[in-house]
Image (tube, rainbow, N blue to C red; front, top):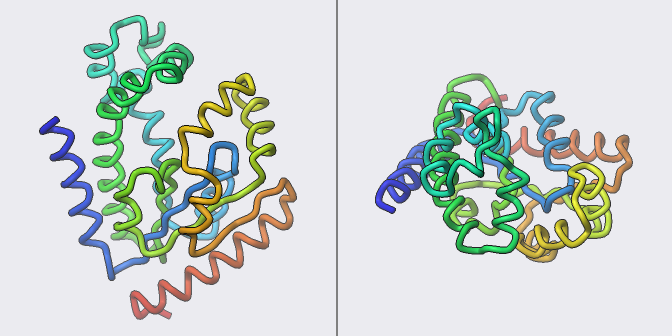
Length: 228
């Protein structure tokens, strides 16, 4: 517990150093909303991207920093033949066991925060105009809202989310709905948003919306940094 608190505090202090020097943009949305597509497009436009979902996969891959702790807490049956987290096995466990979910998050979240701060600080020394933190559970965490300057929510109808995730992840409808029920509601995200990107599947419309968002964030960056 002490180690987790220490990592969380360190990450928050490190990101706090960046406040007022470069815009800190939070990007979130429910599972299947299209966060990765939007963050990829913003990255292509020149933004500095820190994807906490990607970091999560890295630390639970073979040789990842979370693997020894997962082995110790959950046992070898949750590690696959390659030495990585057995995601299917773990998903089944945490789906029905809130205590197991909390234990897993107690391992992964401090490591994710630590790596997030490290990457943000490194990117801030480059010429990126703003930083984007792509965080699936940004609203739910409670701490991210205090750290960011601007919140972008990627949104689509719930039924669209369910269909996308069932197809992409080969999950049942019940499994997807269980994941959605563990996340903030669509309404909870939208009420906190400074900007909303609609992702209904029309790529042209999405491209235009992301470009408009980028232009808006550049203006914020110019005001923050005094660049032009």
